[in-house]
Image 1 (cartoon, helix red, strand yellow):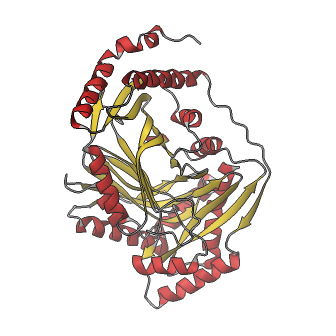
Image 2 (cartoon, rainbow, N blue to C red; image 1 turned 120 degrees about the horizontal axis):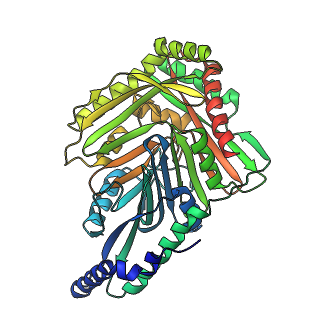
Image 3 (cartoon, helix red, strand yellow; image 1 turned 120 degrees about the vertical axis):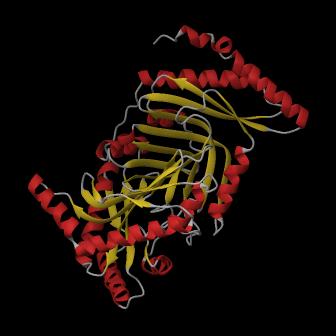
Length: 470
């Protein structure tokens, strides 16, 4: 492989960057302060997943997010600023943290391009506090990465966020950036090699009897009208003879589920939370918000005729349509409370490799004074992952489920400096720790639910995830 001659002229080509950093440093010296500089550079195409595999260190937090349909993939590696908190104020504190960081960021490079400039990566747990003290993630993590690499429609951009103060060596910073670029651009020529041959054993966290009796008990509650819906989750523990290869699992997930959001986040202590979610919580672009009402499901058919019959049954089922309507009503009500005017689009089917859902997109214009995290905190958890009435459903979930949900069914995503964002719901997901994994999936229980069928639906979701992991 030959190194392009422009690389050796990096200092010449980026003399303006060097001068820019020097002037920022001068200012830091004068005002006795520190400043974050966000450098955005266009680079040759490279796979962000391969970059994540090569650049990430075990003790650093990172984040990966891919949506094949939109031609987008992002890897965020290491943190130069982060907030980790628990408690009811987590969304407000996260919003405050992002706003105060932004006041201290100066951009260098073309920040009008998609995914240029600083992005904050956020992941929250389902409940605002984890009951199990050994659960490996706090209930909120927000970080500004040191390195961020994004592909959008074959266009690739590298963002390097750095802290400048009176003492840093500016020449070393530019040199480090040059070395990283060299490494990243060489990765194209050495695609990651994965091998995955392992034996594994699996053990249900909840017995089928316990799950079905929880469904029966929930149906009694629904019958006595305290609840109209509750989502009950199940978990499966898997032990492998080898350590799980995070990158192979993510690569598998994106091959098997090209129409889902593939995600992964690590805590820098050896545990990762990964999955393939069909459900977007919100995306905002140029103040235009889209959110998904996704509830009510049926399996895919083995033949086109069977598939169509399953789809028709789903579209005509009173039970599934009722479950779906609960989600639409909740979302429109919550958005209206924030002063937004939600527009409900025509319902349709969201067909995934092994399951199909009723799906209604809802849109709204977001006023400049409404921060994306205000909307996230209003919407999480939706009846699609909790139930209705929400607070009663959440209290019942704690009662029925013997395991910590943690990041399962909770919001994960990013926010940029212009208020654009994308958050998904972390369903069809797994917590990975060395040679162990815990897989999660859930089912919505409403009047008319059948315990055996709900159990079968959850097993279907768990098996699809297991297939991708092993």
